[in-house]
Length: 597
Image 1 (cartoon, rainbow, N blue to C red):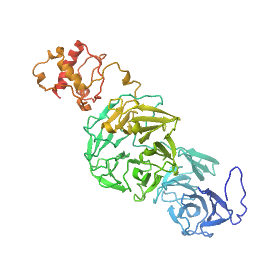
Image 2: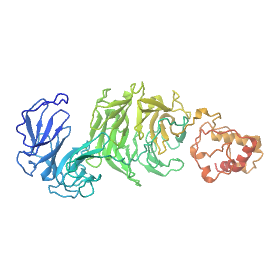
Image 3: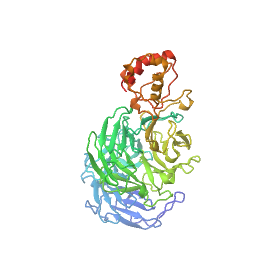
Image 4: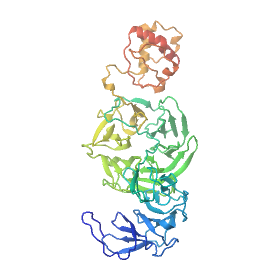
């Protein structure tokens, strides 16, 4: 029996049904019907008007083979049937082709405790096998995790029925929209209630960014090869703006504040060269160990010893943990993204995108790299060798190209390796071989930083943009792989390209100051005892070695220790000083700084 909304048909051969209550249509067009009178579930296969019994015996009962007044039903993509066995106060799970089921929610006795169900009327199961159950006589909706012996109330949790917005009265049917909002039909209240999904707390930053905002075109070097490996990869910034960096060459994970001038913690562990980092709300740090391909470990919050989590079949170049505690791993050499449910069997791996065969089709990937999962469980994949960003919606194996390959507006990507989203679901893409960061949204795209059209090591250039993260203010941190640095691009309407002043390095400035005739007359031998490099340095200094410059428009007051320790870009812009300013600057700060270098 097929369905076509514009050409309805009447099914004649249904004389065997007694009290059909609910129906469910699967992806194959098969129609499942719960028959309360026959205590069974029947299926009408596509293009057929004949039914067959798939659950129950036709006799009322409470054994694993029988049902008592089945109501709502749900069928997953492999034919497993979940049944709200109403008068047995339980949910039964019936595998395809089996003659008996197993109870997966409720203990078979009516009650209001969270270990019990009372007259369940409908059931929905998500892709992670969490069950959402309406209970008519308990006037509530509960959610049950897989293999759990109790549920959690998510709607109608006042403990009694009623007509208030927070109450339910004989809820019967459930439905979700694409945003995760829950709709509940109420028999006695003659209404449908909508319960919106609250913003779930997330451990990373997704700032609200006005679309016409800009970022400084010249980045500040937040970290360089003094603490980074030759080619940095893994970085994570949590919602407190704590920054985590993977240094695989020295076998350590570094934890720094956003100022970058103090090392808060250092975790010693062998790391996979391309490991991603992910930090959960409770402070657990997930990474791939360098001891075996695909071996995922974690540091629990404030622990110095890592522990085993799970093992995938290949190296993970991208790691992500969603709000339901599902761990995702992109495996480039297998051309797929897989996941495990951390609250369940960590040894069961589920392929959620791609196949083991590379290709350009919507269901295929070719060297998937960075991944991102939003709060609606949409999976975004940086499909590197297909030069595109693919979106896989929950339960769908065919992806949609949302960036690259002329989408949108002729956008061309070249080996993208990372993708993140802001609050409004605009995409931010590390366009690796184009050495730039791209934003995509509203059917258009913009180059944000690294927009010179070539690679380079200047502060407005990048060389292989590997990854990117936001801090809570919307500043972008970019892993500049071939320059062995992490660049910070601050939210600003200014552009360093418009500055009329020459950009020089701080030690070069010190060299010029100490050799200026005016300044040298003021220095005594003791102050000159610090040895100086006879030539200006060719390499920039690390931020901790820098002090804060004074603008010509500022009043020249002595710098306090906190101001002296403030990190500054090694490419900082200095305004020209006149003689009086130069002497005052020397007396108040320069000598003190030189003395301690």
